[in-house]
Amino acid sequence: MVQQSVVVQNKTGLHARPASDLFKLCASYPCSVDIVSGGKTYSAKHIMGILMAGITKGTEITVQTEGEQEEEALEHIISFIANLKE
Image (tube, rainbow, N blue to C red; front, side, top):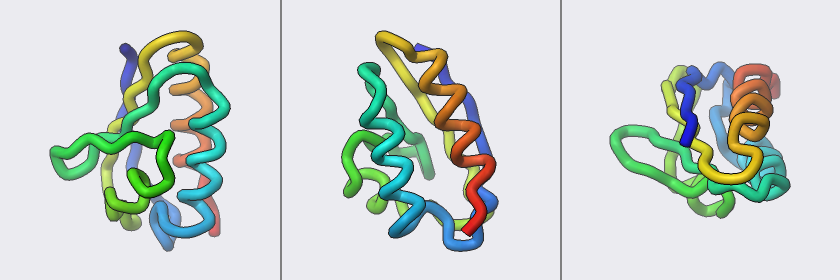
């Protein structure tokens, strides 16, 4: 398992369209992808998991990936979150 933290800078956080785009990105990898926020772990391969995390601008989250292509997935997901502009 690999993990990395990132602070969400998008003004709407991870809601609606950004959550949907993140879900699609995570689903494209064979490894498991989890988001840790507020001491709870949510599956990023389920749109409801992302939405239930309630991630707003300024929230620090940790992305964890485990399995096949875990390092590549982590790199792309962190980059996606860090560069969200909506």
